[in-house]
Length: 228
Image (cartoon, rainbow, N blue to C red; front, side, top):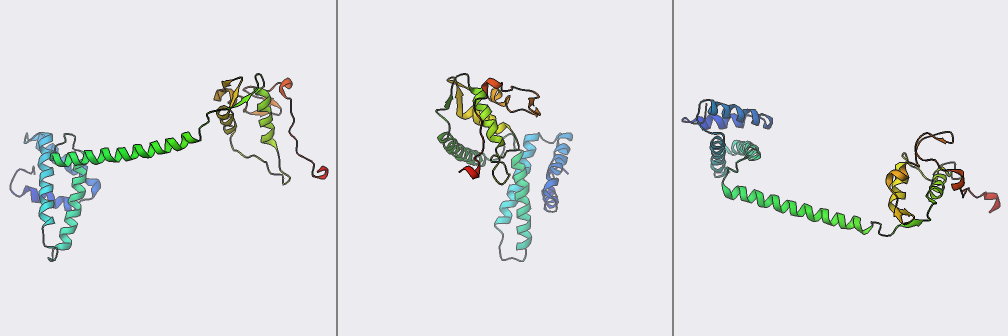
């Protein structure tokens, strides 16, 4: 069957009415290969022929009497044809459908893209509103000292025994330092900050950058409630 003989279109459409959407690609490919093998048409012309056949039947069903006893059947057929036509639209690599349909689709796509761009621009503006323009300056040569204080804060415990600060990972501290602080008037690379937050074996850093004793200038300790 190649859609070229009398009533072939009816047979083709009847198959579609009984078909699941997932079967559309194989069904279409089967008839396309048949047409190509028998030198009946080109791939583009085959697409045009099938699309027009489906479109003609859709129009025919749409003008049927909604009060006829076949109305329920017509509705089911129309839904299936529209599903198949949607599949055809997705494989139209030649823009072979009527130009007004292709243009309308492209206009809709452009409009949707404009809306999406506006949403992204709005979101970007909101993010930029909270972006850091001026960073807190760490005195030159005392980056390790500052990080030592941060590391102490990480270990502080509340009277309940729970930690004051909780994080399953150490990278948030490195990101915070790189984003909100500068050292000696220069930005702090994220990798530089990250190197201070590495695994330890006891008090010894396994890898990364360790803080030397001469940079440990402060000690953060909790207040004894009895001495308040």
